[in-house]
Image (tube, rainbow, N blue to C red; front, side, top):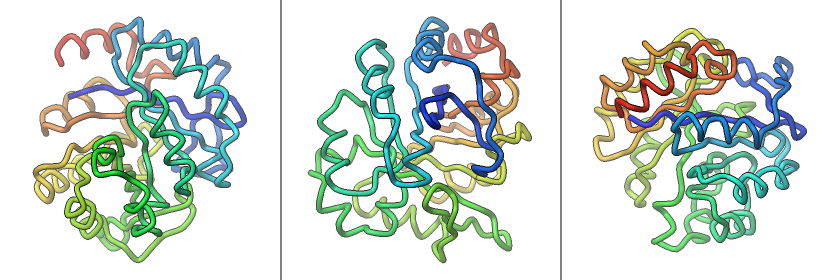
Length: 245
């Protein structure tokens, strides 16, 4: 299982949100480029970038940092946040990004989303399905986790699988930023429901033990943010885990 460090950008700064709440922001006095270089030195091969300004307002204000990262590090970068129109999708597909992470636009404007992608480009798209548990049913959230839809996770997995998409970033927003551990039961269900998909877990990872539990479920990858920034998972533990991949 891949460990993918996350760098969330808000107003050109590294931050973490608590349960996706923009009123509960923790700012970190870290340079995004130096942080990415640090993860690369530890042995990471991938990086997860989120433009939170784009997620919240649909306006990408961290583009310069993202482009600088593409030019100065060798990590495979997946990036999302506010990519909600065909023009932006085409722009980033032509860039050096390894994959785009697209949520709201793919969910709410599915036909338009499909039309703007060549078939060969679909493998470069990760569908972001952010969910909140409602009466034991994982329901999809959109617009930076600010709006709940009437769409459940299982129907969305089916819909995108049937259209040739098999990379998914699935986040339990009630876990995100809490350091309370990932929703293992949810991810186990995802694997059972969509056996051909490559599921990237996100939300709640707090320790090396959490990563090992996700690995035991044969997950494709896990995104960790706060636990790395606050050394809940130490640099030494990161190196150890990566050596066991």
